[in-house]
Length: 388
Ligand SMILES: [Mg+2]
Image (tube, rainbow, N blue to C red):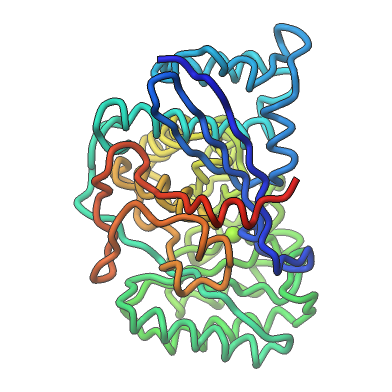
């Protein structure tokens, strides 16, 4: 089989705002076509214009090959292809946007491989290591004052509980670089919001808290979170800036809850730094951003060998959500995946671009059954949201 063409699509939600802290307002969709009539789709969570440039830029030397140029004519079933692209783009890539773009390529290649084999991707990755996958609902706060923010989170928490979710993640970011609507609430108000959400949920639902890099250092974070033991937090996500690995290690040692990070990371090597030096408890690879299924699986295996759990990041359309489910079925240490049924999402692209390739029933995700990725792109929506 040979690759005949590679399509890059830059998509934008019509209501997008650069002031909103949500990367689901855009999408980069890549479609690989072959001479045998099979086509694969991939997606990645990175600025779509940048991703398109990473794929389409012509190569200029052996350490800076063009990705599209390398793909055309190659055999999509060749499992060394990712490594050739990684080595061939090293002087421009190794980390960052080129790796995130390669994640979409890898997803599309595995989609083709699954269709060619007549099997869902997780079967090709080594089969199901768990019977079902438990999703957690990301709650979507609204409001500009902390009381409104608290009440909206509690409303969402009650709704998720009603839908049978066994776990939820509350974004409680009313300060710091990614504060909701530029809010500047004291840290003490964050404690009050955590307390209210826990009360709404009751004791039996796992509660994760994402503060989106809010505190400047471990010392400041600890002053607030040292009192959070009573709320039984499943994990605290990205409490401080991601490059401060020694500060992360201190939080692992002194905070009364597990620490999670990894939504931005590219390749297994960045996760090795996070786990070994940063001592994080929960690794959160994003299938597209980390570089695709191969890198994501390597992260899961490394985390397992070091006694860590996986809760992948995914804040994108049904294409990435389905890819995340395939990864999770194959990873025995994957405890939850990020998932909201599209009809509950406020994000236009999540609601309209693709249909998930699995069934969600009784608070559980069932194994995908279709060959390949199994997510279905709505081509009409793709045309409607496409920009140049
Ligand atoms: Mg996050």
